[in-house]
Length: 150
Length: 150
DNA sequence: ATGATTTAGTTAGCATAGCTAACTATATTC
DNA sequence: GAATATAGTTAGCTATGCTAACTAAATCAT
Picture 1 (tube, each protein chain N blue to C red):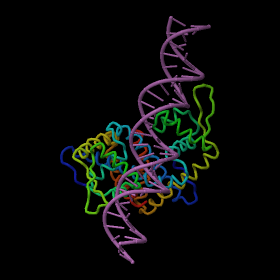
Picture 2: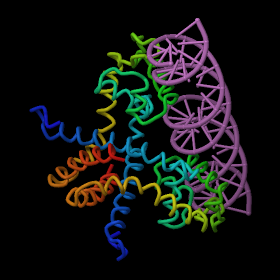
Picture 3: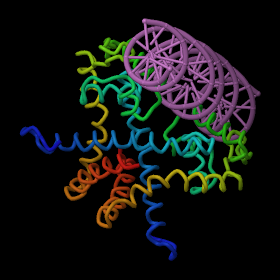
Picture 4: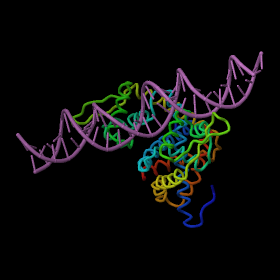
């Protein structure tokens, strides 16, 4: 893993870091999905719901943008959330737009689900030393910035 | 973001870090999926193939374990890879087991796909300062350890 | 040695989640 | 007022996750 080709050393290292992040992200989500399933709500729904809960009501298009999916995909995700009574579609001044709002039930469910979801991760984090934990908090922040830049 | 409830300060911080990692992982993969699609091979297939290419041949059950999915799921993922000529099912001494092996084509495709996939991520990483980049490489390693612990 | 059990993998059937293309309805513009 | 643009939805495809039920092979126990 520390073997790096001599030529264009920095680039190679960058690719390796990128690849490792990618791999870690895939496996991280697979592990956490187990807990997600207990809530009876899919990962895409959970993620979309969290935007509405923490970020407030918005239109379907805005939510699709925030979640990096196409409108038809978000339309169906929202349908699922609505069917479960976690989100409501409200009419707006502009008759084309809908305003999506998390219901009290949705907000409650999200908080519970989120807690359970990150619990195992938080536990794993708790196994780390104080130093590593601090570094990891930095990573999370850094990662968020990076994702915005991609 | 630095607002932490006084009670059980460390735990709350941990949850927040966990949540941020989770969110970042979701969005990271969504962004990278765009590039993935160009290869005509799904993310699960790509990930499974990479285990075979970098980790060598193994049984379906082992691959399912490595990828944190159930055997039927992996069976279908492998079927897709086989259909595309990227992986071969080989018979073993134990007639129940199959040995999965990446074909030369699979290996080639993976290297190309992997390169393209992490390219955008590596570019985003390149926008960071030298300090952040170093930190991130370190922390990617940390993340890998954590995922193993969950 | 043969019958029962365990193990590995597949098949069938269901749900979620991603996409594009095509449609509807409402706003905006000319 | 007609043409165009915009927001969402519907329809239909693929990929990926699952559990349940099946087949085939190996192992175990009598």
